[in-house]
Each structure stands twice: as C-alpha cells, then as structure tokens.
Amino acid sequence: MSLPTLFLSHGSPMLALTDTPAHRFLQSLASTLPRPRAVVIVSAHFETGTPTVVSDANPEMIYDFRGFPKALYEIDYPAPGDATLAAEVVERLRTAGLPIDVAPKRGFDHGTWIPLSLVWPEANVPLVQLSIQPHLNPAHHLMLGRALAGLREESILVIGTGAATHNLRALFRNPAGMPAVDAPPVDWAREFADWVADRAAAGDTAALVDYRAQAPHAVMAHPEDEHFLPFFVALGAAGEGARGERIHNSYEYEALSMDMYRFD
Image 1: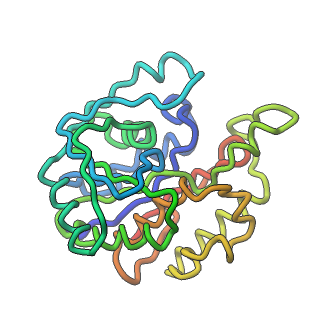
Image 2: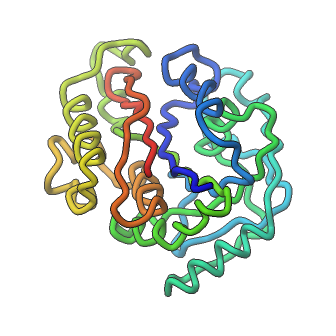
C-alpha cells in the first residue's frame, strides 16, 4: 500500500493544550490514514549544516521554548526510534548523491512531539528524525524528499512539520498586544496560504519552489525559509507529479496559518 506524505503546521507550543480547530484536526488525523509502520519526520526545529538522521532508539524530550505553562514541560512523548529505518534513510540519501550525517543522540523537539502527541497520543509509532538545512533553498529540500519517495511503498509515512506562515515579529510588535488565538486572519496570511493551496492542488511544483518570487506577501509570510522548508520535503517524498490537498485550513493569533497538507 502506497502512503501519502503530509505537511503539518505546528504553530505555537500551546497547540498541545489549546482546544483549537487545528488541535482537533490533529486529534482526528490518524483515523483518516492507514496505520504506518513508522514515520520519518522533518521538523523546522532540527537545523543542521548537512542532512542528519537520528538513529537513537529512545529519543528524549527537548522543551525548546520558554515562558509557557508548566503543563507543557510535563508532557512526555516516549515514542521509540527505529535504527533500521534510520540506516535506510541514510542509504537512500547517499544513493541520491546527498551528503548525510548520523546523530546517535538527539531528542524530540516541539516541532515533532507537539503535533504527533495529538495524532498518536499512545506514542506507539516509531519515529526517525531528519534535519533541514536552513541555509539551503526549497529546491534542495525537494531533492531531499525525492530521495525518500520509495518509503511510501514500505508503509513509511514521511511528515514535514513547520508552518504555512511564520512571522513571529508581526505578532509581537502588534501595538494592541498579542492577538487572541481565534482572531480573524490578516489579509497577507490568508492570501499567501491560499496561493500555496492553489499551486499545490495544481501540482505546480516549479511555482512552489520559486515561492519567494511568485507568491503574494512571501517575505511577510516567511521572513526566513526554515518553517516552510519541511513542506518541500513532504512534497518531494510524494514523488514526481505529486499534487497537494489542503486537508485543514485555520488561523491562530491572526497571522499563523495552521494549514495541513496531504500529498499524493
């Protein structure tokens, strides 16, 4: 059975605790998918100079945020790693001519454990983490994903987790203070997110890779690329000619698009 690939917006760490449309969507997501044998997950918060695979059998927790409620720091997500799958990811990237490093010890950052603790709260799906390279462009990350495309035929689910829009400066410099979580979206966030959804549905990979030049409000939506780069890994891992379906659309704090995608 060939699995799809996914891109999940993880938003604020408060996603784990706050009853929002995105929170509820992630809680229901597993029921819409065949159960994977394991997951390869690419988080915007795992940044390295060279693509790096985590081979740890029992990754620990990373609470890579400050100033949030104590309950967030008490969440434990003890999903196992998968050393055999990690080795296969290494081999696939090497075969594609990509440099690759292995990290024997690296815990789950919040880009991994927050969304997946909602999707599989039992923490019983093995996870292998793969890093992004924030200094490299979307085309590189598309290639990274393409190297993993064959995993879909092995009941391995490839997930990218980041943000459909990610401009925290726009949130914190708001003179009225931090917007409410359910505040209506600002125009630039909605227009950018809708452009991405339109191009993904059309299978227009070239336009998506060139989003900085072609998308409306691209710099406002993503002052830096890093939170959007996992989108391209998921797109690439779906194979040549893949199209993306926006399977969830909502906004938090006016400017964070919580869009989720399925690529086939």
